[in-house]
Picture 1 (spheres, protein in one colour):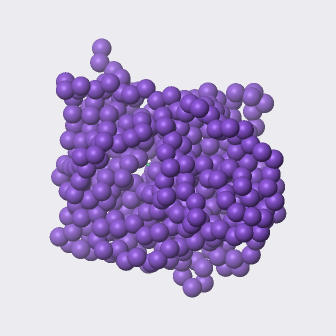
Picture 2 (tube, protein in one colour):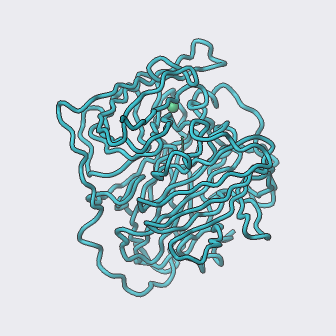
Picture 3 (spheres, protein in one colour):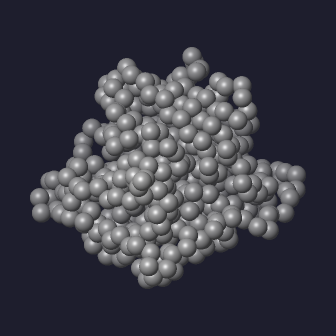
Length: 456
Ligand code: C2O
Ligand code: CU
């Protein structure tokens, strides 16, 4: 089952990610063709499943994969994505975490959705280095669950010397015994966000990699699951957290466990202790996010076999992310957003922000460059990961405790019955969505809009 052992010849992306072809010869322009279409993939070996997936439209041999193909680029690049919708329903592509012009944000608030057979061009300049991701923003709980999600890696900025720089996309799927995506949606799926019975890393159940004993690797994670939280653990090791959603943090820190809520990204360095031939498993352990979700015990995500030590690596950088604090004071305007759930009709739970369920909302308004403090009050019985489009924010405190180090987030978990505050400088003009990234919650009301308009 060491399916990935041989593909490990591309250590920068193993295991098993396709990469979009850059068709533009200009080194500072990345131009790609992206297609969303029905596809057949094996989520369990030997058990084909009908899914929806992305593939590379510039490669006539490309087939749909889960995750979809990685978009690789560097800071400052101009990116042009020619997108074609071959799904039986309309869709859009949202570039989660990238600070793009509103016309490229890929929501029904920023464009007319792309009808079946139609195309749309997304154009953006990359202003942040880090790991981001793309996914549809129409019927999101269904389309993302069917397999439409993929990573974006933007190189540049602080690049520590590592033996491998790997992208790991986490998900879970509810599969029937035949290996097909289950068509059953029960009330718990709506209430909690669908939790699958099979956990996937880069589209596989516990894939295997080889890594040099004693080496240092960079592992970048994104949680693309609808509802599952991942809490990473690598027995016998700790992680050095060097970056969050929007790039490298001001000061890295050690962590025994790293919690990743849906939509969040974490950038980690791992020193692989052990000898040639040792086996280690990266696993996820239970996190209590409310409503008494049972503890399934640790689940292995990745099997790592240590190999002969590699050449020595350079020292770690002495300075990390250059994150200037957003200046706030007692006069900074505050917004209060209250997250609520209404399960009066348990077969049809409704999720709200300030009592309103999307699309029945009043948009917030502001001007580009406005600095604000947002207070997110979670008055519900479970955690909600809060995501704001088009801008990154700095978390000030959570449940009364200050958050360190300084870093950029666009998605943050707000634990149940607590309050979290972040500072944000509003981005460019347009309508930007914000919502819970448990996609069943977003699609059942926990979503809002911020209209940024230049004042004359
Ligand atoms: Cu990743 Cu509005 O979403
Ligand atoms: Cu939620």
